[in-house]
Length: 438
Ligand code: NIG
Ligand code: FE
Image (cartoon, rainbow, N blue to C red; front, side, top):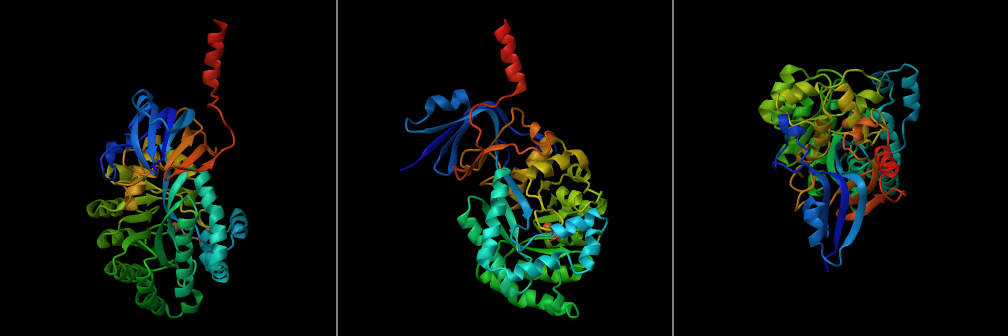
């Protein structure tokens, strides 16, 4: 029997309806907003989107109804770059950075990614799923309904497979959708320090074939950076991954201009991520190969750096920019897409509308899911968030506030805040007082 659900009384329904391709230029600012909107959901899919007047008279008699109470309603955020499964945490390094150490100094001294690798190797798959569920809850309560999820803290065949299996279980055991990426090339593990070539060989001849045989990943990513993998090593690994049918993403030009962006373009990667150091030539190469830039401003903020990627130049060059959190225990311990949007607006001068498009539909396209999620249109999955605001621009503007009120994935309530009743905005209560005085 099919189940129907209507969401009525949406002050603004931010649909992001539009062309079935990543949005560029002016399109980034077109949110396809419906005032006093309503939605009808059947089973896991959206079947009708319109004004309340259009949708309400045709509701089936057995339909469940949610009153959004004059709040805004959006597609769930799509976080297209996360590292959400790892052992332990690194609050000690956060403290060291506060005392003046840099992210690179801590990594060079054996901390950083390697410290998480030690704790992740010591953790069982069950333990990683248990901590992963805690982070899944953080994503959901932040209004995120899909995450791209990278391995990369195992760095042995069995430990990388353990991480990818944990990601697969999280996808099935939580309301959050996970898109898995193999990042065995996150850093060179200590045991291969004096023989880097042997680790690259292990990645290519053993890990990648196992990952693809067990269908544990859709993408392959490499951290292309001084101290991690060189351009030549990255080229070898990503070429092998591509030959096995994986799509490509690259950590590129984050801490230094090391050539990762140009390589992403050369290999036809779907995305090049970070790009803090990328300049005009790198941006032109992304344009010529249609690579989507994934910008991660929270990692700039949280390592205490000051150089953000040049989002304006990217938008002007016609790139379909994406915003993501880079959630991980080191450089970006936050799952907040709202924080990413606030930083996009204040530090990268993206408009609030550009930031929202980059956090939803463009991110969905970067995961190959643009036809399924990222906007509120008939036929799409009912991944929907009701935020406790009356104007969509408040999302990034009232910074650091947990705006989500109810979160739906596949048409089912995945998370809800305790408060019931309509949105209490000061303006409307002031307005009602005025009416009362008359
Ligand atoms: O995207 N750049 C490489 N990887 C992560 C950092 C991971 C970590 O510090 O544990 C990043 O910033
Ligand atoms: Fe990352």
